[in-house]
Image (tube, rainbow, N blue to C red):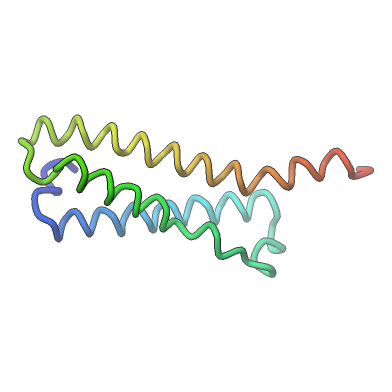
Length: 107
């Protein structure tokens, strides 16, 4: 992955790839927790764009494109850990109302 981020276009492709992977993970999380009801009243908040924009901002701020391959790989691993933490935070935001509703249910 580090060798693929040498140009701005390939970095933009990585941003879109991460965004679509995050969208898939969050959609699977919603489907697992709520079933088909999750898609009846779809929330536009969790679309995966936050993770893609986070990757782009961190890559631009750190100068990821100009680094050597080994340094780029190390920095990209740190950036991807931040993106994974953002995905986990979004999953927590999806699951939080459901877990809070469990205490009020009679089942």
